[in-house]
Image (cartoon, rainbow, N blue to C red; front, side, top):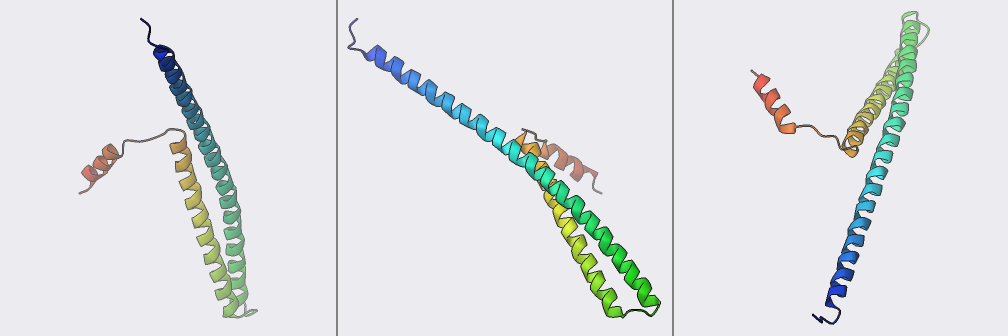
Length: 131
């Protein structure tokens, strides 16, 4: 009958636990939103950077072709052609790296949104298709 406030303490403890769980849940939600926002920003940033790098590759390719034509015409040395080819390679490498970052950030966005795929099933399907 008389329990010297033990029931009230139990109620207080359970209320505190519920508040703690609610706070943890809210923090988890906020973290999830932050991860999604960060991933979206990364995707758009890397996409814009990749588009810029692709334009840079085209410009380097045009310069290399022009330099080659000038070399064929005897106007410039082969050293200029080689230098521009090196620049073209560097631009292509940079474009490839930004594409890789864009694709990786897209995967991170997919994961942040809760996406997933059955890895085992897809691996078995690939393994079964091999000769």
